[in-house]
Length: 454
Picture 1 (cartoon, rainbow, N blue to C red):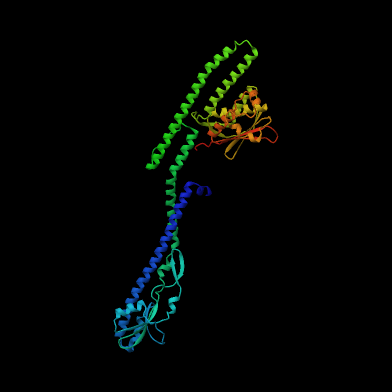
Picture 2 (cartoon, one colour):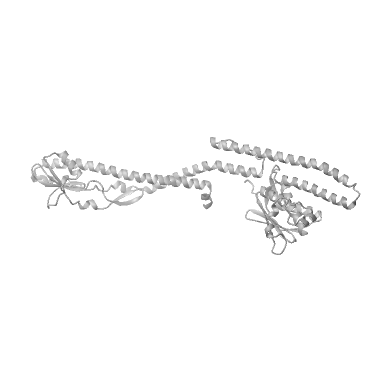
């Protein structure tokens, strides 16, 4: 769940869901307020009509029968009763009393009682989508003294209407649940639809890093997505062309340099001074080695070799056997028992460089392989003096050598670790150097495991 909400899809989903829910809540609040206002306005108008009808009808009933009539005609909200006590009135009528007086005419005398009826301040339970809430009636609620045309004085009570039984029986939990489920489903679909092109571009970039000749993206979807896919395909084509031209150029330079270097070697054999001849031949051999490893460095960034599933244990066994046949002391410990997705020749070159460095600078290579957490870790340790902590990061720089005298003795050019790191990064791995506590330098190569079908 944490990974989902940390992804782009989860964030878009959460943003859409919260936005829709907040908007729905605000809209419902406004609707509830407007609904209450409309109910109060309608109740006030109904109270006006009912009060006019009740006063007019009461006046037509004989005085002796009015009490019986009012007992039958009065309703909980509008009541016309006989005055049993004298209450102070307001100096000016209320808006409702004034409007009722206009409708009844000047023959009727109306006066608003100063004190509100007790029923006006009784909290009312209102049931809504947000649950039961207590509120007070904000519509007309007052007492009015009414003097009929025959001189009898009655009192009109305009009280809040009773709570709606239908509203109280409504269960909004099912409605809210269905609303949230439908909104969450739609938000998830929109989030998936929005982030899917981004995932496709990210996967295409990953595939491009693994294989420059990976098939281009299909131009489908919205116009903006097609435009981005077309730009990505054009970028891939330019990178592929650039790598091809660079490799061709380096290959041509290497080929053209081999011929004059070979002629120079043949001519140096004719030099009479043996010591001078040996020095010149040594310098020439170093030049040829630099040309060869320079081309290897360029090839280490080349991704034209096809990716395929490889058995790591078999690859290590093959590399160690070749090193042993060449007279190097190499011992392999452990088994990975996993497959890798990579370029066979490139990974072989990476492992050979690490073992060669260990043998050159530490006389032997102890290789330990182990698997864990979806990756294989290959540790190559030598018996050399190690490297100063400040030099551990710089040894990956092209042509950088820690100790010139030792490099001359071993014949290195300072490109072995650079080539190995380039190959490891192309396969989604990494290389790190540490000085082993028991002595020697340890190179740690981590490569991700390959899962079929991914």
